[in-house]
Length: 324
Image 1: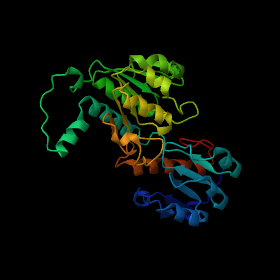
Image 2 (image 1 turned 180 degrees about the vertical axis):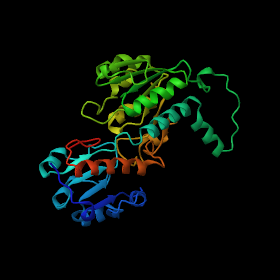
Image 3 (image 1 turned 135 degrees about the vertical axis):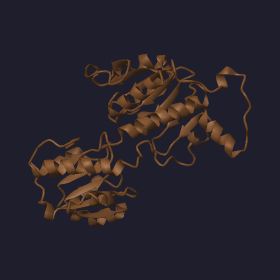
Image 4 (image 1 turned 180 degrees about the horizontal axis):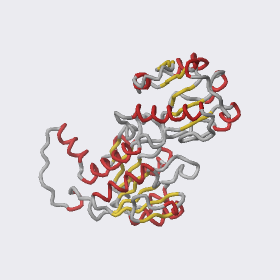
């Protein structure tokens, strides 16, 4: 059992380059002491002061050796693949994720990307920058399209995937989805299948949206074989993790026109290198891993943090979004 110091002797460290975690935390009036760090170097110098750490991208597992007081890490992100779970368990440090805190935002972003692709909004924005008023198009294949009657395949019918399924159905799309346990229900989709059925479902989809976590099973999920199963007129939307897609295979498929295009909120390497071919492909829409960005994000994480602190003070074993 992990024991925390009492409130009057506890120090929380917020470590993030941009989020205003300490400001939103202090607005709660808890009276708990806190510090805010804005760089990985600061975190490396001051990790020893923290009983509780609220962090995401600055984390590296070497910090555990210097974290003499650390008892609990609340991840700011839903993804936790950067944390060595065995090392946390060995040191007696608890870990929880922020899963679900931005599920609505990510689903709305995915839906926005789908709409942007269907309505050719990136082309319109490019034409605006060039002061070009595009004329009407005779070629049916090059016109804007509508979503009603189209099929969306949601890969990962969890919190995000379920939100996306319900949004898509409001646009009268047919939604099919995969999840690890189909018996858990369709979560807003018209059909639910196990993850092993993915490649048999790909030929049915006009849009394929990745909303799954990064796991050993989902890494490289969209490889050359899977991309080849997609319709030539289908679009790939990735709001999951860049490593869920085999990027060279995707670039090849896009450049050859074997799929209509892709909207990518995440890439294998982030920031996306300036020399990546993805930047220059006309059938690619890129957003810089901002699907989860929302003005409510900090408060959502703090809700989870305070809930978990109370559980630890009560001596409970189970945390909200527990990882370790």
